[in-house]
Amino acid sequence: MATLNPPAAGKRHSFWKTAWEKSFAYQLLFPALLLLVMVQVYPTLYSINLSLNQVKGGQFTWVGFNNYDRLFSSSDFIDSLQKTATYAGSYLVLVVILAMCVALLLNQRARLTPVYVTILFVPWVLSEVVTGTMWRWLFQQDYGIVQVALNPLINNTSLLSNDVGAMVIVVAAAVWRSLPFTSLLFLGALQTVSTEIKEAGALDGASAWQSFWRLTIPIISPTLLVVILMTSIGGINALGLILATTAGGPGTATTTASVLLYREAWKYGDFGAAATLAVFLFFINMALTLVYFRVVKVEA
Amino acid sequence: MIQFKNRKLFNSVVTNGLLILICFVMIYPPLYALMTSFKPLGDVITAPPTFFPSTWTLEGYETVFNSDMFRVYLPNTAFNAFLSALVAMPFAALAGYSFSRYKFRGSKALQLAILGLMMIPGITNLLAIYRIGSQLRLLNTNLIIIAWYAAGGVPYTIWIIKAFFDAIPHEMEEAALMDGCSPLMSLWYIVIPLAMPGLFASFLMNFIGFWNEFLAAVVLLSSNEARTATVGLYDFQSQYEIAYNVLTAACIMIMLPVLIIFIIGRKTFFQAMLEGALKG
View (spheres, rainbow over the protein chains, first blue to last red):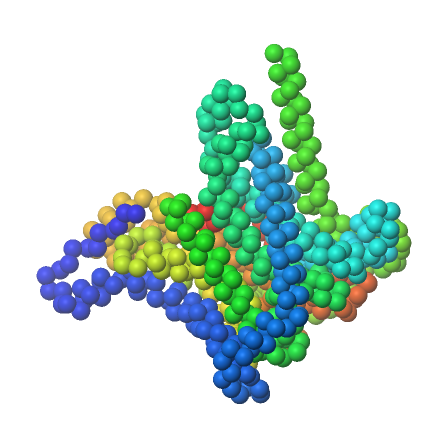
């Protein structure tokens, strides 16, 4: 990283003036940092504090880790963790594999037709609620066009009101929506693999399959790791799309930890319990982020 | 040789065939929503469903146009999204300039910390913002949602802007500094004009994100006057439970503006997204 030379200091510059000029880089950062501290850092600390208190009518009473005991022993929580694992796990696997396939296909073409890319990217610009509404419509009991098409295969089970079916629909909608962006990231990485390397591999008798696993994957592994981590984080925190598609139902079939948090806070008004869950999710995210930082460092 | 040619042709046919299939899957839900939005109510409660409307009608759109969706929610959405995207720019541009042009103690650590902020689950902070907002009587105001969106967009925008600034050669600024131009003036008159395509792309990407945002809007804006389009659509789901011609008409009206922006700005978007996502 090159640095700009500050203008040569004048003779009469006082100590304070020099100090002021030297701190210029920090001054430029100040507005952004202030905003982030107020709207991102402080609320996190507030949530942590909230999780250590019992809240009744705006009154905080310190209860230590009581909320955590309550949370970890509740069956709703354990159940929601299972749902989160199912959701985030299948979302991760499907997004990574399918996006890699799409990227490999796009990479086959010498020139990308704008029509392909534009159509592929439509899901990316859609809101979670719009996506949820559209997918619900596809799976309405008697009137949903995909549900009706699938009926002979699934014994007329209404997928939206079936535990497994609802989970499948939510995951499918989420994968559908994330596929464009992830494919683009993979495509960007694939395009850095030079044709010389592949040709050299082919000359040495490597099959396409071998050359993918032995040559391409190692070269794009930094991107692959970043995508895996970001997708895991996205899957664990998913909330809007689930609310809009199934609202956590039927029953608690798609109630992941985030959905449970939303319910505790805004349906039942139990902000202590909700904050405990929020802090729990926060630490899971931070753990993944630390891994992410290690990966980014390796890359740099 | 002929065999080689055939093999190439075969590959191309398979590749394109699969790509067309994928495109079909990606475009089908919105396309079917578009068809549904032109159906009369009778069509959407007919089993089995058909792809095309039996008669083309604007009934669904009429209902949306005469509802608060068009009168209140969509204008609110446009206002919030535009202002938030605008507010985020100077914050991110100054910080991006600092990271791009100056070497100082803690630069790398601060960049990582800002990246780390992006990983905090939104709901963790929303919970606190909701409580703080209700104490300060800021719920249902534009101020709270704009602050939330702007702060949410700033980290990512810093990354993208820094990448674009990095790509601009330093010679012109150095010459300007020699001539007695202040660093802020050289940022404003030299760097920003040169980075304009990137800045504009990140502005539009933020706008699209804020336009589509749902979770913060549903939590922080509950009054009818403050409600945004995505929250309105969420409520529509219970109000027009089975009237999917109305619901899909609302979907189309929400997605159309951002779709148009995306199609126009496509090229710069892709560049900006790759810069932001991978140059960490």
